[in-house]
Length: 260
Image 1 (spheres, rainbow, N blue to C red):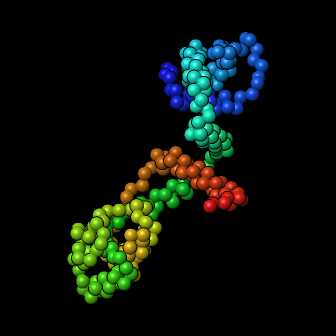
Image 2 (cartoon, rainbow, N blue to C red):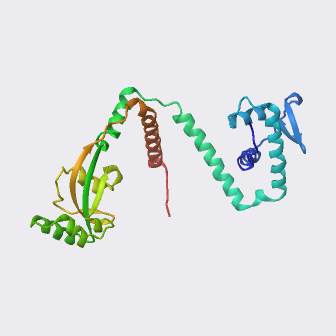
């Protein structure tokens, strides 16, 4: 059931050793000693819990702890604990361990009502359930995009203008974007598309990080929603993540953070 996972195990042992205090352990609670270092029966139980193997034989767990302690002592004797990179890694690992434990304690038991879950489900699979088929012409400047819109108003062919003027990779294909969801597009592009209907062409240029877009919507279609019960666990996890992010934002707002 067990196999030696030296990296993870040594990390646990070193973290424990770095913070150990002198504790008197009764003889009947000592499972083994390695060069005078005690491995207690409690440590065996803790180790099995950490490894999520409560039914593993105690002797098997003990053998792995002994092997790890031998390697740990060898690492200490080699001077690795004085290595700056090792010290930095230990600090990060300790911080990560404490943060994960804190988050489990704070958010592990959080739950949501069916009403909250259904509302989140509707938010996630509402407008996101609509797909668009469209084309766009990407220009470098607003003036160029405005000129293209003017050309279209005067009877210009969208596909031909995309082929000759678009700077985007879809230009040679007439600006064809295929079917897409707005969630896969940047916010300004998505917002513009969601205001458009089948057959609409941009009346004003849309700016994104890539440049200025002129958009045409050729078609739309509704996708069937996944069953709520099938998505319940995923929606709950997303609400938990949202609660965690909100907590972090609130904590940061009251913290003294100085970025230099």
